[in-house]
Image (cartoon, rainbow, N blue to C red):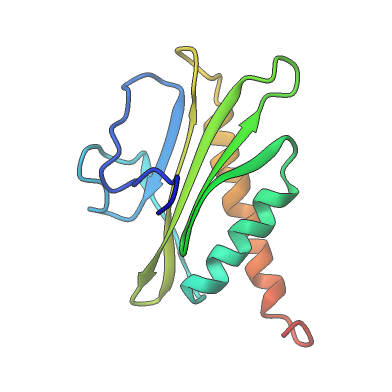
Length: 138
């Protein structure tokens, strides 16, 4: 994965300025905040949805890419502080799932920004996949 943090071996700082969601047992060096959903999609469709969602986010740019992994930086609106977002898509028995880690690069607390971002991205990914399965969108 060129320029993408490996979430299976990532180490969390212990500060309350990140949000990690992953399948159970995926992260070897830390416990995710919650389990990731499984999507009724192929891994390729899921990563394409991730790409569309990230492209629609303001002040966000891709900084690393692998076949089923992406690394992004999103900057805050006023002070332009960088947050790092890593997404890895994984195969699942029922479709595809992902690991997503959003974290502040600086500071101790983030006032819920990273939790809100992960929740917003997951909702948008689900909506993008739902649109993909509508008649006439294939």
